[in-house]
Every structure is written in C-alpha cells, then in structure tokens.
Amino acid sequence: MSFRTVVITKQAKLNYQNRFLVVKNGIEESYIHLSEIDTILVDSISVSISSYLLKELSQNKINIIFCDEKHNPFGELKSFYMRHNSSKMLMLQMKWTQKQKDQLWKQIVINKITNQIWVLQKIKSKNVERLLSYIDVQIGDKTNREGHAAKVYFNSLFGTSFIRNHDDSINAALNYGYAILLSTINKEIISLGLLTQLGIHHKNEFNEFNLSCDLMEPFRPIIDSFVFYNQTRELNQEYKMDIVNIFNNTFQYKGKQYTLKDIIKLYVKNVVDVLTTKKEYEGFIYEG
Image 1 (cartoon, rainbow, N blue to C red):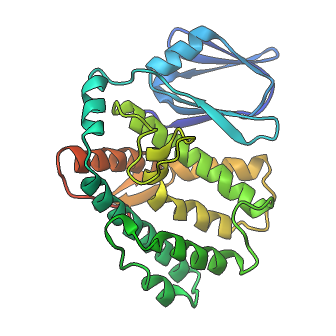
Image 2: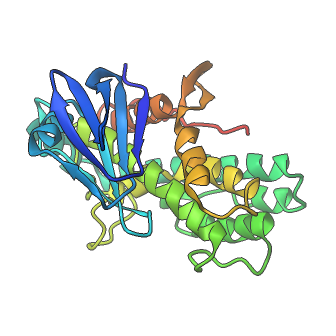
C-alpha cells in the first residue's frame, strides 16, 4: 500500500525510469518507487515534469497537487478513467434520489458537529453546550444547523473577531489544510468511478468538487484543531510540511487504527455504499 507524500520545494526535473520517480536537482538524483507514493505535492513553479511520468502517475492513481508562486495549492492532476466500470458507477450516481441525499447530508452534518464538539471539549470551551443544541439536525439540514454551529465553533477557537477567509495566517493555514484534504477526497471519489461535480448537498455550478466538499466536512475539525494549537505560527515551509504530515497520522475508525489517508479511503467507500447499496453510514468520530 502506498504511504509516502513526496514534497518538491526547489527547482527540479521529475522523470520516470523503470517504475521509479526520478527527482533530479542539479547533479543530485533521488529515486522513489511508484508503489510507495500516495501523493506528490509540487510546491515550486520551477519544476519540470515529463509527460511520460505524468501518464505513469495517473495510471498508478498517484495524487499530484500543484502550488502557485505563493505556495498555495491551486490544482491537481485527475485521470479520466480510474475504474474499469466507471460508466456503471456514473449511472448509479445519477440515480441517487433526493431523499437519499438529504438523509445522508443530515448524517454528515451531525458527524461534523459532533467532531467540532470534541474539539471544543478538548480546549475546554464554554460553548460546548451551545454547540450540542445544534446537533438536532433535520433531513437535509433545512434549518442550517451546520452554518449556525460553524459560527459558534470558529468564534470559540479563534475569538469573536475572527472572520473566515480573511487574509491572515490562521485562514491561510486552514485553507492550506482544507486544500490537501479536498484533493485527498477527490482522489478517492474518482478512483470509485464517480464525478466530483455531482454533490449531495453542494450544488454550485462553478464548483468542480461539489461531492468532495460534501464528504470532507467531518474531517475539517482535524485541520481546525491543529491550526488552533499552532495559530501563532506563520505559514512557512516547515508549518506546511507539518500540515501535510497530518494525513500520515493514525486515528481510530471502526475500532481500528488507520492513517488519516486510509480512513478517508474507507469513509468515501462507505458513503458510496450508503447511496448505492443502502449500507449504514459509518461516520468518522474525531476524539482529538
């Protein structure tokens, strides 16, 4: 099973040779077998990549994330066909009923708020009881419990003056972590032969990742908690590497210990099974 996240931060040439990723930096060359690689994060605009390597990475279902000149993730490589029966899976996806999607969204929102409560309990916030009052979610979250809970939650973590998506170091770190999370979930959705555009709750016509945005919600508190304990740090290269390494940390899921990457893989498969074979939702509970 692949386990490595390869981060390229300096000028380099990336090539393919005999099942190996070859990273050439000046006269130095590094070789990493493709079977070991889960994700490649290209955090430099001075990197050249051979088209043959891109083809091999795509065929081996290796996630590739590209960063801009400000070192923020802006895109990724996605294969057209990552599953032999993708046409069948797309037909099943289009048959998901609104009732199924609304019921699942209710469970996802409850899961997310539950994880937010765990975070607030860990920091001994006085707003735990208030957040508990939002966990009574209706089908499809018609009363927007998710939005109300988010406001209380972020104010509890970062203060009442904190505004999500303002240009500051806390938001920069959150956005960086969320981008890696989104990309990780994209990979798993595509590997199951589904479209990331067709969500169960998110329906923005300009969002290519509506389904991914739906499924990432219960995992956001992991990023939030990490940023809370590091909120005085600037988002430098070391901090970014620490965020990337969150996905190699182990957490409990269904009574066993897995890396976060593997939990996401299992979770996405479960959500798809809920919608296609009527299995029960097996949420991820983050206990800090």
